Amino acid sequence: MAQSLEFLRFFLDYCSAECGLSTNTLAAYESDLSDFLSELGLKDAGALADLSAGRLVDYVDSCRRRGLAPNTIWRRVVAVRMFYRFLLLEGHLENEVAEVFQTPRLWKRIPAALSVEQVEALLSAPEGDGPLALRDRALLEMLYATGARASEVCGLDVGSVNIRYSFVRCFGKRMKERLVPVGSHALEALRRYLEAGRPLLVRDREEGALFLSRTGRRLSRQTLWWTVRKHARRAALGVQVHPHMLRHSFATHLLSGGADLRAVQIMLGHADISTTEIYTHVDRERLLKVHRQFHPRG
Image (cartoon, rainbow, N blue to C red; front, side, top):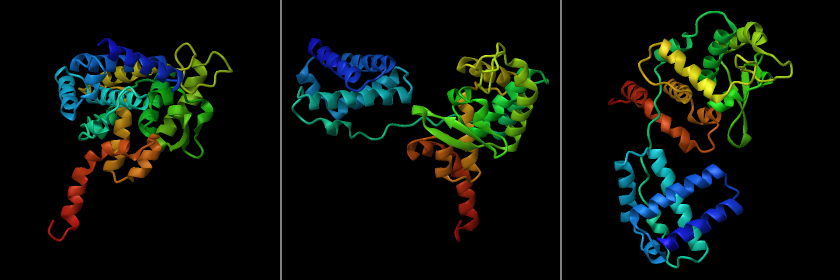
């Protein structure tokens, strides 16, 4: 195993010095690849070169039996692919093993989404007209109206929202900017929060964050998470709810209502439309109805 671990160290040094990957990413790669090498007993260059598609599939099955999530398994396979690519480019392996990774596409976990009725119950859960209740109502409405990530909503400033023209400016991964339309219900909740809620929470006039904590600071993702969970329990939805579930619900409900996949991709800020396509499973029932209605032999 010593030689394989040495190769792993070379790879991590390369990822750090040449690719500039973060400490967290390097730690994930080290953990994933250490597990891969140990599980398959790949001790040296010869063992690494003898990797077959069958053994890679066996490793994936092993991960499944250990209860790892599909996304985690896929991340491990990607790490292994990068590791082998590095070994080939650096000349540590001579034979071509790229065909090993031409395995069938791994399954994808269908994201859990709330029903329209569950979303309505959640959005109605905040009670009262105090500043925190107004904030929470606007916060939940914004999450569902825009499909934005929790970090994106926490990062919104007051100037990010244009109530007159009904859109919000979000900054997604790698600070990529996008404009997302906002519906009338969310805009009304925002207007009430800005007029009667936020002024009572703000402590520093220079604070530009849209959503504030009870101490007047920008709302953290942890507080946002806790807020969503609190109101989900109050609404008695019967399922574990997290902020990202509202993003899933946003996409699911748009597509089931007939929205264009490309438009949903843009609103979600997905770089690749294949990421958005995972939501199309919800459209099957609607497509069946259309087929039965319009096809001559439906």
